[in-house]
Length: 181
Image 1 (cartoon, one colour):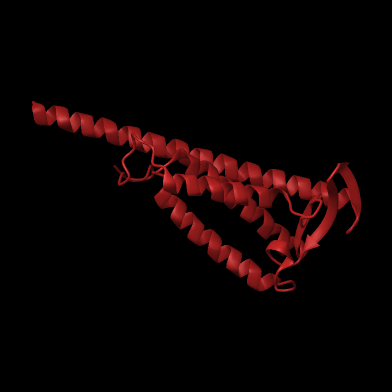
Image 2 (image 1 turned 60 degrees about the vertical axis):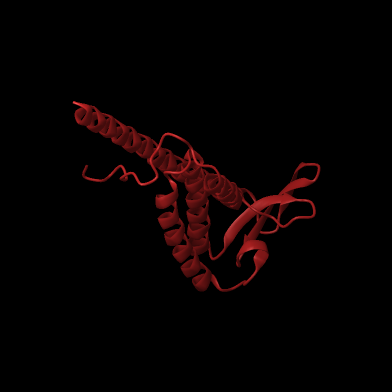
């Protein structure tokens, strides 16, 4: 009788864990796809509305300027699109593997992972399709950047929080939601 009760509690806890992880994976996918699509739409509008180097003042200290970044962050390593694309794909694979393990720790990892993956894919597609990343947010005294860059930084910050804070109520060693159990 006691062992039956313990088994029932264990099964209920396992179901709850699988449900929680499945919800987190759905959140991850929705955020990643949303960031990717929004990023691509905004970059398409910027490319259609502005010539390369053209600027429109948005607010004091913030302009919209069409810039093509042929390197990585801050324009480092320009002209090495193939190498940067390969390194991006390798980084995305590593990040995805890490997110799989971290998803159990904190719900912020799902959102952060979606932001990071969606933004990274947005910049990768831009790099492959257009020979460089279209940047457009141009604050005074800072290099231009784009929505994907914002998503990548915010995603990394949320994942860092997930590393530091563990939510109660979910087993870290629980089976992933796609397991056969």
